[in-house]
Each structure stands twice: as C-alpha cells, then as structure tokens.
Figure 1 (tube, protein in one colour):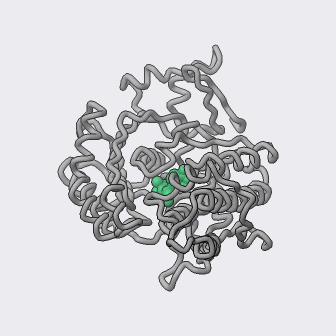
Figure 2 (cartoon, helix red, strand yellow; figure 1 turned 135 degrees about the vertical axis):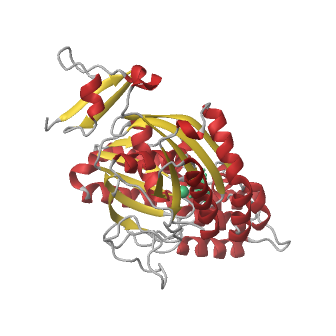
Length: 408
Ligand code: KG4
Ligand code: ZN
C-alpha cells in the first residue's frame, strides 16, 4: 500500500502504483510467497476482471478495427488489429481528401470490424464493450465509425465507450509497456503535435503544442513541393539519407521563446523558397540538391522536437522520469535518435511503442476504451461525433486554432 509494485509476467517486467485499483491482483497474487503473475490463468477466461473490447477507428485515412483483452492498470493483449489504409485513395491528390476519406470509411468499416472479430476468433457476444473514436478528426470519417459502433451496440446490447483519438495515442504505452502514470508524452503525427503530461485515462495536461502545422503535415507538404509523392514522411527520410543536413540553414521557429509550443509552417515556406532558388532552367532539381534539402529539413524538425522535449521533461519535474513518443512521425529514424539522446541526458526512460501501434490503429482505441470502461464510463446512443475535442479542457485555445476553438 502506498508504494509501487512490480512483478514479472512471462519474461516481461510490469509495474503498477499502489493502491492498485484492480482487485484482480489481490485475487490472483499470492502475497505470502511474493508477487507472482497468473496472467495465463486470467487469459484462459477464468478471471472476471479481464475485459474484452472491440475498438473502431476512422478519424483520418485509416479504417481500423481491433480486439484486445486485458486488465486495466495491469496489461493487455492484442487479439487482432486490422488497418485498412486509404493511401491509394489519396495518393493522386498528395494529401487526404476529406470527402473521399468519409466515403471510403463508410464503405469499409463494417468489413474491417468483421475481419477483426474473425482474426480474434471471437464474436460480438464475447465482447464486454465497443470503443469507438468519437473525435477529433475529419467529421465524415468519425461519423462513419460512430454510426457503425452505435448500430452494433443496438444489435448486440453491448455498452458503448466514446474515445478521444489522441487519448488512444497517449495511452498506447500503457498497453505496450505497462507504463505507469504519470508520464510525459510527445504525440507527433500528420494531424497533431503536442506534449502532454498523462496523469490518468481522463487526466491530461497539455504542456505545449504546435501553433500551426503538425510535423507530419510539414513532411507531407514538403514532399509534395519536391515532387516526391505521398505520404511524404518516409519519402523525405529516404531522400535525406544521401543528403548533407548542414548545407542549408532552415529556421527553427519558436526555439528562442520559452515554453513547449512549436511552429512548423515557416519551415515549409523556407523549403519552398529554397526549391525555387535551386530549380534548374529545365524546371527540376539536381538529385543531390534535393537530398540536401530533405536532410536539412529533417534535421530542423528533429532539432525543434528535441529542444522542446528537453523543456517538457524539465518542466514536468518528476513525471519527466518517463517519456513516451507516438504518432506517425515517430517512425523517423533521425527524430527517434534525437529524442533518445534527450531522454538519456534527462535521465528519463523512453518508451516508443512499436511502429504499427504508433500510427493510427484501433488497438489503441480499444485499450483507451478499456481504461475508460473500467473507470465507469458509458455513453448513450446520442453521443456526438466531434471534429474538435481538446484532451486538456483547461488549456487555453492555441494561436492558429481557428474561430471554433482548439482542435485538440
Ligand atoms: O499517426 P499517423 O499515422 O496519422 C495521423 O496523422 O494521425 O501519422 C501520419 C504522418 C504522415 O504525415 C506521415 O508523412 C508521417 O506521419 N510519417 C513520417 C514518417 N513516417 C510517417 N514522417 C517522418 N518520417 C517518417 N519516416
Ligand atoms: Zn492519429
């Protein structure tokens, strides 16, 4: 009581903060002999604290469904995780087209759910609840997912849990690494970029955020400017491998200001100018010039994220002892390396969930749903799909967040 408990689960080490809310532990653990995990017994369905959740995600350009089984605060297992990416739908346009995304989600979501249940070898009747992304995101896609979830709930009688997409990303390290609260989270994707102090499944403090573009968006737009294709992140990274990152001094906006807010749109504008300057009379770029531009751009993004991470860890004090990173941009090798260096120098444990769980997926929605379900959340059928849904409701709306308030 009042201290941290750690135990071993197979070969994995787990830890939780006492008082442990889950009676499961005291039921399963023989305190007399020491702390022993009976996870295998629990998995065989003999533990009533074990929850099985269907998750549905459709807020951007991935239609996804997953089934997870787990015990809140302890650990979870992914039984299936199906992602139908819409890359081919949007590639000709160099970015996500909301109308096309919405149609594609509506066409595929029920098939993806069916595939997830089949891959898990379970039926709807085996679920305890349905968790669905209710925002923030492209409203047509969010509606497709929530309508599907509501339909399934009506048909099966299963309770519904509305999940904030960003909470899904932010809680993933608890699914993959049983990370204990509180921790600092950098969420860095195509639509979002923010530092959060994660204190609980429903308790987030925003430490800083981009005031304009997200880094993934900057990667995508830069790739488009350089004629590389979509999605831009991996293409820019591949191109940057042969480039000289020190050749062009691209700006690092907001680094001279205190705090953890970031800006990436100026970087993209500087890159456009550079491209125009370097364009040959024939209208193209020399291969080396393009590689150097990509490398310099990538270095600038890595520098901004590293410096702001340093500040976030410092500012969050004790919770800085744990630092998690998620979102599609966390796939970038140079950025990962820069963040790992910051974690090392700050004495923080760095957790990067596996790539497939860093990018959009439904396992993260199911896990966030499981945590919410365990703390008593249930939604009525009338819950709304929300294009904007800040995780930290106390945080001030950001500059550049638009008339309708903060997006996230
Ligand atoms: O998290 P995610 O799959 O979707 C959301 O935006 O929510 O992130 C996708 C973003 C895209 O903008 C993509 O270009 C970027 O992540 N990305 C990368 C890399 N891989 C994906 N950015 C930089 N380097 C990468 N290797
Ligand atoms: Zn996302």
